[in-house]
Image (cartoon, rainbow, N blue to C red; front, side, top):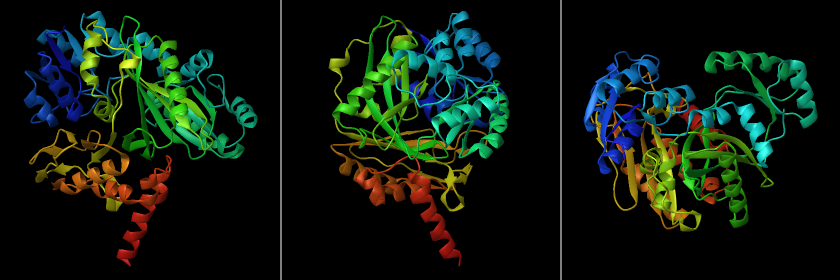
Length: 458
């Protein structure tokens, strides 16, 4: 087992990894930017290292500085968390070259799924359903039009190396395709250093279902059930739950088996998530695979009792999972709200600043993963999420009631937060029935809040 781990991240995920390592008897190193000097992850770690600078490029995405810190402090392994360098195969390779184990999949597995067009080809060969579209990257507008005419409009143009909802544009007809195609190529080149794009049929009003997988390096691979991640704004998830109201036993089995096939097809090890789109006729299609721990891993932990971060560390250290698929038991209903520093009255624009009052909720079945405290600063340079509120209850109505109670207990003053939006989601009749898709938030909640604001103003 490792003796010392460097956590190459910040915020609540850095705190989460440090806590898991401490319970395993492993020392930790926190790295930090000038803005994060007084952060919780710096306080909780056994050692800390100042990177200098404030932007992501200067700090948490700076491979040279991170490797220098890890070398100087003699760490055995590096945990990347999520975001920043977590899905960077070059970083994974460099860690391993310096005899510091990257806690995640191997670089070659990341490459197989990181290039979306390549991942699509791999899934086709493995028999995993994919959205109809181009067989690979399309070089120009002419070829893109041919694909779009074959599968039927609307279509989406996607960056081959994209992720996190970036590098995606909708084309409703031939004219719009000719407009957005060069734009996506430019965006892809700027964001990912790769201007390749591909074309897919646009699935109208789908649900976003993902399957958590775990694989050790001795050949054991299991899935831990699904997560429903359809409550999104601009393709960024806001609320997640498990199980999904959209799946019955037979569909859950088929999707889980497809996720296992997908992971096996790329030789995947460690924790990963296979993401699918589910259409109105309950057809599902592979969307992507995330080669890292997910923000919403917490709901899976709540229903399975398995600590996914500890499993990541054990797998990276060469240990076996110690259980098989038949041993996995999912119990109850779990739900997570991502608490962001955003202003609901201004279209959820970022609301950085100093938290003056911070009173955390508690009680049975309530978990709070957070990096915030009274007096801390939420900087504008990074993601606006500062906490994840998670509940577990015996069924979905009880989970909704528990989450509503916990949100109302959660008191944060000094900045605006997304809590009022979460309360609106929970109270909405369609959400309470479990009848929603990826357009639910903007179609039913944010528009209603905008209308209320306009009525107040008049």
